[in-house]
Each structure stands twice: as structure tokens, then as C-alpha cells.
Image 1 (cartoon, rainbow, N blue to C red):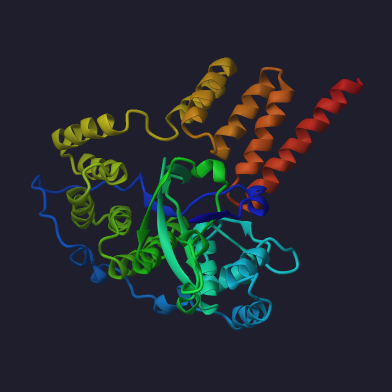
Image 2 (cartoon, helix red, strand yellow):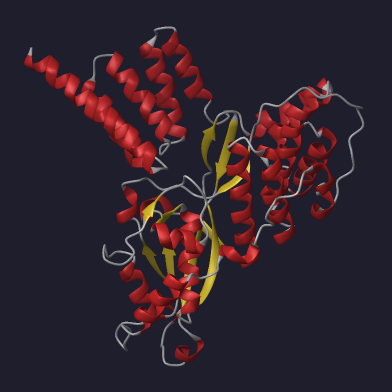
Length: 405
């Protein structure tokens, strides 16, 4: 199996993966009885009666639907294929060319295949959906893969997002397989991460239903982060219905219920996840919050011990401690703590930024500039990248002004 990494045009904006769960949310006080509810099948977790319906129902078919522009693009691409340049090569070449696709990374929102094609941008899930839709229109076979590696984390307000990663394998049309001598000539992996970030990581094939559920779950997380939990429910609901075995969808349901104060439904959803996978730290963290707010402190303490054993250093622990040290004026301590967090999250733009601030306070503009550049490189949105680059320009101008005095 050959691998093709579309990392160069995307790298300037940094690369992240799909949102696979909501780890922690601060919620309103709740109370209730101390008996734990039984676990339910995923579809039994849905509570439509608690939420007003959407004005327009979610169109699940839109996730991978081709727009007229995409169909025109594939027709043109089909005309450029030959015995020495098959449809896969033509598609991948187009992704590198400024006059065709030249994709860029942008995690501001999860886009459908058509939306990603129109914007020429998206997060890795959006770009995978777009590539798969184009490949299928070209008659290629598509296999989705989950890439197992170290989780990455981002946060928005009081919500922490846990990110995973997917890629796809493109195969030749069935009619052409008889004319190919080797398996390595047939299968080609397309990934939107730099190859160095994928070394040593395991992959496993997943169904398209799971990929669609990932899309729905991403949308649920984004809508929730935007402060619209009632709308978020319907996206999470669609994720659960699309693939009941996809546990992050049930975890997201639990967070939505918790945010809305439906604590019993939240506990059922979170216990459902933990019954399938007791090592799910996101759901465990959320369940601790439920139990604490319900006044069930002994149960919460037991769960807290389990979580500490699985995750002794929660994401952003040292970053938050470093910012506290910054507020106290202890920049050397802050630098030490930010460096510790960076060892755990080497591609986290927020950590690079605060480490740059600490270095500037400590009189090391060279290191400050290096970490601001890394913050821009790893930013997950174009807006974030521009912000860090503006700060980098400001830092250089300040240093130039001091040098000229």
C-alpha cells in the first residue's frame, strides 16, 4: 500500500483532526437520588421530547453529496487520465495545483464534501469526505481508516475537545484490477497529516456510517460550543442514529443533557459509554461532574480515583498552572510549566503562544519569536494563524525599535 501525504499546502495553517468528544463542561447545579440508572442501548438514550424541533430537519445525505461544480470537476479530470496517469494520480495532482484545488486546513467548522470543495478548505474530516466523494464519482473504490495515536486536545471556553484522526485508501476501479500486477499498485493512502506525525501509528478500516456519525458529532460539538445546546442535540441525535456503536456520539449527548440540566439523561448516556469502554476519560470526567453536582460525593470520589489512574495529568493542567504563575509575575516558573505542557501537547498552538509570552517577559525575544511562529504554524483556523502572525510582526517591530535606540 502506497501512502500519499497532502501535507505541504496544508502545513502553513496547521493540521488537526475531527472532534471526537466533549471532555468537560461547567454546568448548572442539579440534584437527585443516589441510585445509578441502568445502561441503555444507544438509541434508547434519545430524548426528543426535551428539545424543540429544528425548523429544517438535518439532511444526512448532504454530507457526501456532490455539487454541480464537483461533478464538472470530475468530468474534466476523467478526460485527463491515461494508461500512465490514472484517476487517482489526476485527483491527487489536482490537490497540489493552485489552479485546481490546492487545499488548505481550516477547523473553524466541519464542512460537507460540497462545502469543503467550494471553500477549498476544511478540517481533516471535511477533506476526507470531499476526497472520497470525488474519488467515488471517478469510479474509484474508497476505504476509510481510523488512525490510532496520541489524542490531541483543543478547548473553547469551558469545553475541551478530544481529537482523533481519519484518512482514506483509494483503490482502482474493479475493471482495472485484473491488469495490475501488485497490491502496492492498487491501494493508495491519502492523508492530510505530515508523514512524520503518522510514523508508528496503527490504522483500522471503518464503515462510511461511522464517518458520517463523526461528521454529525463534530457539528453537534461546534453548535454546542457556539452556545446552542438545543440545536446541538439534533446533530448528536443524528450521530447516534447513524452509527449507534460510535461512542463519542453518546458522550456528546451526555454533555448536552448535562448542559441543559437533564442530569438523569446525562448520567445514562455517560454510563452507556463507560459500559462499552471503561477507559473513556472524557465520559468519566463528565460523569464525575454529574455525580458532584448531584451531591453524590462518595461516588464522585471513586470515579475521580479511576480517572486519576487513567489520566494523571489532564490536558491543559500545566498550561493553566503556567498562566497562574504568569499572573503572579513568576515568569521563570511559567516557562517551566508551559514547557512541561508542550512535551505532552507538542502541536498545541495555545501552549506555544503562552511560552512565547513567557520568553519575552524573560528577555529572550529570539525564543519568543520561534514559539509565536510555531503557534501560527499549528493554529487550527486561518483567523488564529493571522492573529499569531500579527503578534509575531509586533514582537519583531518592538525588538527592532529597541535595537535602533
